[in-house]
Every structure is written in C-alpha cells, then in structure tokens.
Image (cartoon, rainbow, N blue to C red; front, side):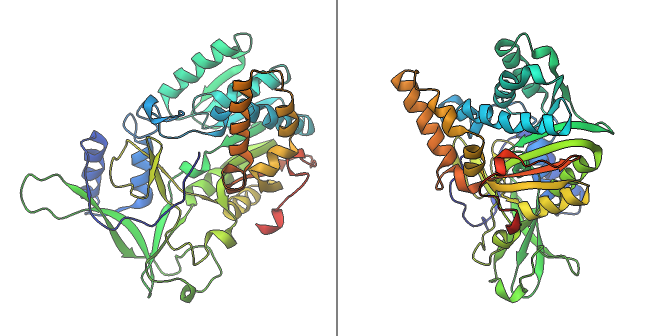
Length: 396
C-alpha cells in the first residue's frame, strides 16, 4: 500500500461508531472482564465474520476516495508489476519442479490476472486463499473476463492442505495480520490493550480507550537492546501471528518456494529507540491516521513487518532463505526496466501513467525502499533472479 509516514499512538478515549462490529467488540470486552488484548481487537476489527474490515464486503482497494476505496497496492498501479514478478515465479517453478501457484490475500484479483497472463500455460492450478467470500466473487468475475480459457485452473481455498507443493506469493498480506502491542513506561514493559471508557451514566455513546497491563516476566520486544535505551511512552509491536503463519506454511510445504512482498524492516531497524511511536497505522479514504479505536470496521489497520522474525519463522519450519532485498531492487533484477521499454508503442497518456506507476514502485521515497521482498525455498536451492544484485540477507 502507498503508506504515508507513521506517527504516535492516540492516548484519548475514542467515540464508538455505530458500526455493529463495535457493539460486538464492546460485548466481548465486557465478557473478558473489561480488557482485551489489542491483538484480539485487531483480529475482530479486520476479520470478524461478516462484519470486519476485510470480511464485511466493503470495497477497500482503489485509486481514489471517490470510488469508496481506502488504499492502492502495486498490482493496481500497473500490470507490469505482476508481469515481472511472474519471471521470478516461473524460475522458482522450474527450479523446484512444481506447477502450482498459491496466492494469499489476492485482493481485487489484479495480481492473479497478471500472473495467469504470463504463466497460464506453465501451471496446472492457481489457488487463492482469501477469507472474504465477497472478494472471491469479485476475483472470479475479473479472472473469468480476463482469461476465460484459464479460469478453470483457479480454485479458492480457506484452509491449507497437509502437503503443499508449489510456489507461494503474498503481496501485502503479512502487514494485515494482528499484532501484540507493548508499551514501555520507564520501569517495565506493559501489554497495551483496549477497554471501555467510563461513562457518566447517561446515554452518551460508549467509547473505546487504551489500557495497559504489566507484561508477564520476560515478555518484551525481540531485541537485544537494553530497556534503558527506550524512552518512557515507547509503543511497539510484536508479530506472533504473522510468524506462526509463515512457520505453518513452511512446515506444510514439502517442495517449492515462497515470496512475500511488504513494507518493513529487519529487527535491528524495527526496534530502534527512535521509532518510539511504533508502526501501527490506519487507512480510510486514502488518508492515514494512527488511531484504530475509531471507525472500527470501516478502516484498515496495519503495521510494518519485522523481516528478521519472518526469516527465523520460515527457517524453523524448514525453509531456507533465498534472499532479502528492497522491492525496487527486486523488480529491477526481474526486468522491470526492460518491461517498461516494451511499452514505447503505447499512447503518450498511457506511457505517462505507466512511468508514474513505475516511479512509485521504484523510488526510495515511495515504495521502492520501504517495501521489501523475502524469498524462501524447500527443495533444490537456486540463485533467484530477484536477489541477483543487492541481496541484504546479511542484515536480517
């Protein structure tokens, strides 16, 4: 997603919006004794069946607030993104002797459309794993129109097989997995959760508010930095669910490869004391804010990815790290420049649009540096073209 700079956390009580999801969360907070870990709050806000931001059926991906969307991802910017990514996937399929693609969090289906267009004859099946039934319908309709001769190869799944073979791709899927929030008060680490703010006994709207509790002994961010380096008021995240997800994929895969593209840092950068506000951010109508306690179910909640934790989780599950680099370097290695050159016959307007999208994908101040790519393999090792130049695995 095209993400503006993050800021610190809200510290005031937030008015509860009329979305029925807010009532569901408030009820569960009461059942839990008045406090809920943020990880659970984020899980419900994004994925509560039929009500969550991603599971409720609203449109989230698009180019402008006028279409009711909240953010845009790389495949929506230009089809060249999927075209050059497909070169890496094709190499991985050949190197691992597999013929299936698994995509997690397929969004509008734009990336699936692009990859199918490039690899349709090389694959026997394209599996999309997505929790939203509404999105599945949109994805199927899009792929049916774009590739009527290939759509029979596409299936949808909501669970993993015991034995997974093929190449996995996940574009901006790890950042949307619920996180555990931790706050440093100058003395000890606290678990940051959500409570219901006191009311004055009137019919005023219920409000959500931050509430901290002492963390269990030994529970702290996964960094070697001593606590004394963090200033009081520091808030940061840990990513247990994303790491468990990656470890499970690695364990289930008997042969294949995986590539994850997302915004984030290695652990040494993620937990810099200067990053005292954490990375949690919300997105609504192409505007960003740091407060997940308002407009619950109507805006995205996201954090950056700790790629060191992802690498370790994959290795613990049996994967080897193929490489790790910036998105700009990865796409360049995969031939984005050459793909752009092939658009020279397009109209001037189309060329300008494409060049603008490429600038956003590659520029260091846009998505080129903030976004990273990590690759894994289980089975025969190969020198992945996406990491041929500028590999940063040593920084993980």
